[in-house]
Image (cartoon, rainbow, N blue to C red; front, side):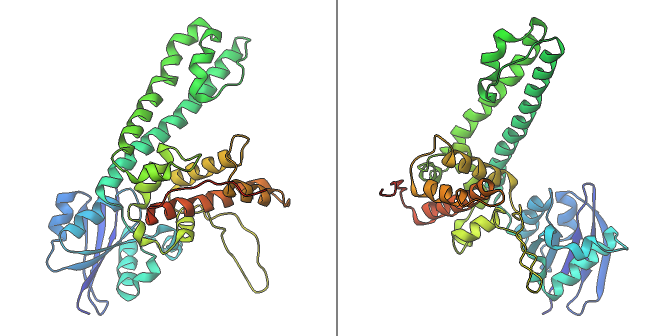
Length: 336
């Protein structure tokens, strides 16, 4: 093997580069600006190199940029690099060298992840922007409730989508004009954009056949996976979204741990919300619901929470199956 391996420790303004040959000899160490032009100049397509970098906000565009000029780019899973973070002499230069050496020796130790396409990444920005706005709306609603309490009043319970409409007559005049627009128009605008974006991905309509899965959940699921053929089965999808239990076995000890929470947090949250609906009072009478209710009735510590996570995990496998097999969903209830 004659390929050069390059470790790239990425920073917001500058990145550290370490290039080594097949024998592990350091050929070059330098610092480069974290821009498209600078990276293309420092790492041209010839000779073709294996480039190793960590997951992070810059990983997607850097991976696509360097792959386009002919390099083999591996994005290391940051959760698997404890040997890097625990280094007592950690510097950007040392990190770049470690990435290069491990990438030359055995890239599987990096647990490399697949980078989404530019189109899917761009569409996901809309969904993440909406999620940020929802969190901001929650804080605003809490602020309104607190402000009303400070003048001796209290607002009744209401869901976030109808809060502004239902609470407008109850708000003190000095709060109504300033806060009501913030709680209504922006979210509605994003929801319309999500519906329009879903029409560009026809596979989302197949996933939305499952009650509890709307345009937002289906679109986030499709965009995050991007290519369903890279998963061997539905169980792997549940693990990909961090819905499988962590393991820390030692000898005869098999402790029960929480889920890994790896992967995309937005999709995991949406799947859990859908599971809440399926197991809730308005959920459809189907096999998935009855299976989840049977789990929660077993009792034990946090039985309901465990059932919700289990349903979310099985829901991920179900959506994957509908997508990969191009099949229709039949929510037939179990026979009594």
